[in-house]
Length: 189
Image 1: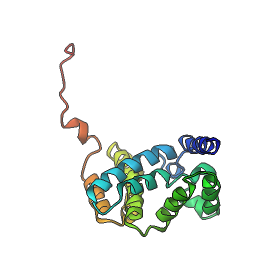
Image 2: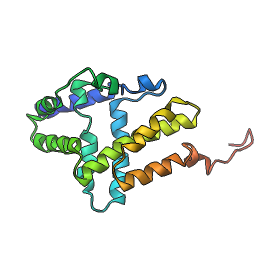
Image 3: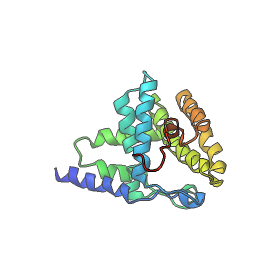
Image 4: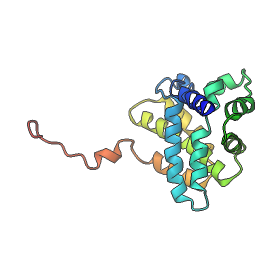
């Protein structure tokens, strides 16, 4: 149990690690754990839309995809031009003493290879999480997300991912609650 608890403490660190790309965007912020949550929810939705996908595998892949960042940090695109990390060693180190460590390592590797239907969907879920954030920021008046959106949209690999993104781009971020909003006169609760 000690190794499992140490793994859980390591994974918890993702709550404290900020996603570094927002520094270049100039607006917004998110921890790696917050991003992982969004990506996993998106993956669940995608698993319901793609019957060929193994939902457990897809969602677990999304929960784990940024786990190495608990050790190596979240490097943005500029940093990746100058800093070399050893994600393979980080994954090996964090999973070596876990009874399910090989399963975790295999899923992270599968995500990185991007060949299976689950990996393609997981990678799209990762991008759609970013697209949702960028679209919401754009909808409230920030201009810099509009520069980033075309790049994120180009990275989508699945029809489901592209369809979700197309709908995101034509939906206002606050539509979900405004459609049933009723303004009550002051004094009426």
